Length: 138
Image (cartoon, rainbow, N blue to C red):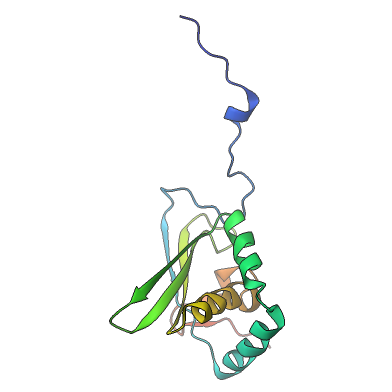
């Protein structure tokens, strides 16, 4: 029986070029549990107002670029936990998780996108686990 010829589409990787894509067998990089300082918390409300619901588009863009998104109710802490999962650190193919928490689901999701888009500018590499803050400049 002759073999089927593979067309060009089946040879190409559909995930090639996706900024945050991490394969299923990617090594574990760690949690990015960024805690906002007072200034960042104060700016969060202004950012949400300025976005006027655009966080949904920001989330869609992040998903299209390879991040995964999940959310759950944390009964012990009485809050929603929203997370982005993928290769969030540039020049690394390890899998990381960025999370945000709130007793309000929409606020938790907005806070997650605020961290990812506004504070970290799409690269979680400046996160410092010991202090749970971002690298300080200046």
